[in-house]
Amino acid sequence: MSDQRSGGLQTSEITLDVIEALHELDGAGVSELAAHIDVAPSTVHRHLSTLSENGYVEREQDRYYLGLRFLRLGEYVHTRKGLYDNAKRYTEMLAEETNCRSVFLVAEHDVGVYIHTAAGKHGLWTKSTIGKRVPLHATAAGKVVLAYDDSLDVSDIELEEFTPQTITSVEELRAELETIRDQNYALNIEEQIAGVKAVGAPVFDADDTVVGAFSVSGPANQMHEDWFEESLPQTILGIANEFELQMKLS
Image (cartoon, rainbow, N blue to C red; front, top):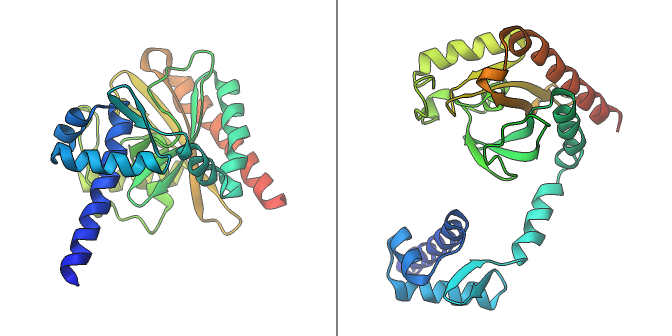
């Protein structure tokens, strides 16, 4: 029984690896996919066949791509919570008011996930697509959530270094989170991507529990000090407060 369970778990893990790899590689052939996830081509082919038969994978000549059936599942996840659906308008509003790229992020386990994104007129797009998973410790919105979410333990998070500015010390990160709680917003000064700055602010529900965060980002050379450290945080906090009020009244 234990062997069967182990084999079943391994099969499920390979299927998930195939799906993730097809997304990461933007489609792939059997051999490329097998090499990427380090399993035999015959095994990959079996998994692809099962996924294809059920509409989750499409074959175009010798390459396989994720199928349209994922759209239905993705839309369900995207709109399952009213919070997620309602945040879209405020994310777009934030992009319009700041002319910067805007995102709404929530935490899932120990990573951040972009629920909504919007590009302002002068926004620097950095592949911040819906569903993208990002490090909490190296992003403005992520640090905000870390600062207020008691279920997240900084010591359990891998503090990977992305740029020389990334905080990789637990003690330094805890001090940063204390500063964020004092001012109610977070700054990201080229901590995830060199040449990009961002500001993030939290969103709280009626029980004062943090449920996500808004952030805006742009080229560092356009984020002038006074605007970046004073005006921009107030703009984001204002949008976040409007969203909180809308949630409480709905």
